[in-house]
Image (cartoon, helix red, strand yellow):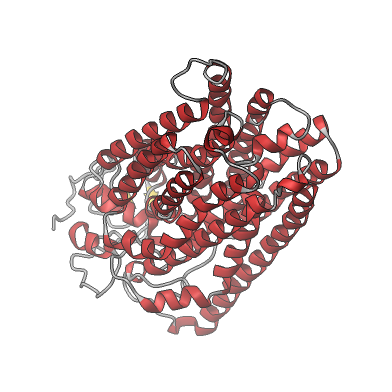
Length: 531
């Protein structure tokens, strides 16, 4: 372990001087409390990987100089955020993969494969049965294998399977491929929650989740324009070797597979092995995220944390929102084009008219999550984003054509809720096994909601699908109430812990490096929840 000397400089250019009460920056000197250098960190069974990294790097146990922190954040942003976004181009592409079945519905898949009655509904739903079946194995596999490598394998196989859909000739083939697609997507949401919590502080996480989740809106726009081009240039050519829907599946599948392969080579599995950070920078990053009270992950599977996740009220408040909020999800995925077509527009018009939904989603997600980051009021901004969605749902149910279409667009703000939940799972759930378990329960809730979603659009209700639209109005109100309850529970927990600490006074003690002992948010009484 190297000692800090008078001439040493940290990796971001800040000189460390002998005077322990002062750190010189490039501008004015900043007063600091005396640093405590940890030369030996004793191993703890099942502790977070950050504790092992501390043994190598040491720890200053003091706040970083603001200029040092800004430069480190910029370095992480430029290396990590593009990768997270490109492969939530895993969600960008997984979202297109799901909406591809909607585009295919108006580019000939029904006729080519002989679908009839509600069989298209089941082709849409079977995806989520596959996801549901593999969610619990994913909990263990994510901890067993390097995170980025495991995600990249899933994405690559997933792209190959999507391309295979182009070869399907009947209902059974579509069901088999769609089921396997769901199996391969099971790891994605839990993995992205873990990536975000590894690299960013609690205050930074909500906005970063908003950024990578907003690529779903870009997917909605890109997918609509792409499907329109296929429908007008390929779909109308009687001599084309492939049908329009086959071109869509082949292109999106192969693109997804390429992205998955690239991800294997460029995304680090954790900050501990990031090639763009040297040893000292990794130590600085640990200090940066120390107050997250979470660390960077442990490979030890702990059944007590699974039990805590299952008995924690917040787990089920999160799960209810994700379940209920995804029941109306078909208005943006499997039934988006069909719904717009039912407002009185043609097939080709519907492919273009769904794209503004994506633009609104991008504006809403980035704008609201940025406001939440600046004000530290995540749930209030989330509730504000629900209000236009509720109004939009009412317009869809009570009007036609242009007013109904405007309502369809404003309903695109509802994903701010799921973005907020993902951010809260990242920053408010501590304990490596608990975090993965809560994320997987949320994904199970997501799959169940999406299994139900296409079934709310029954063929007998076409073309307006009024019962489905009424259910959407009711659901949007219920999930907004759920957000209010979440905020009350989290504030109450923070208040109780502040009172406990105050009551103990000078007897209140903390174990050294308790932040990196892989404690859960309920075990660690120093933990405070973001609201």
